[in-house]
Length: 166
Image 1: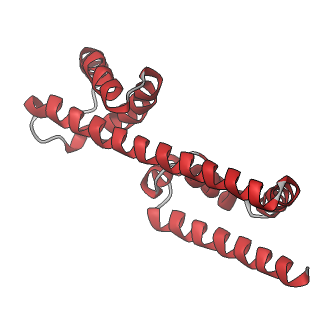
Image 2: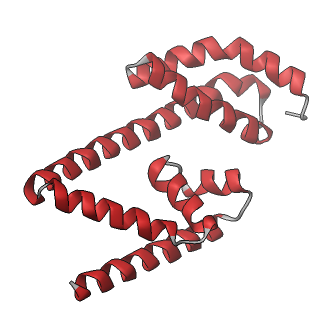
């Protein structure tokens, strides 16, 4: 809690097997459990200073695993649903239209400033939360939200103008 890296490493090595088993049980897959544990490790490092009572590390860490596993499962379900919806759209519109729209979207995204592309990618491709993106990029959560809004607005305007011109 005082910033001693060696002490944290020992603590983490002691608890990691139990936390990994818990993540595995919650996600149902060992590989998914490992992915969750990567997020948990980062959360523990960044938030250990918030732990008031060192004796409560176990319950606190298990709560983080539970919350990160729930987020992981939610993202997985959302991704699966999005893929299913995209596949359905391809079947109804035909592959040429879907491929053309995907290409148009990628071209429009490429025109965005790098900071906006970075935030879009982290949010939509990597499934990160605003808070996680802010921490990774060392910017305020409000800045992340602003960049997401600006990028979405730009893409929406560009798509609407393309549809009108067709």
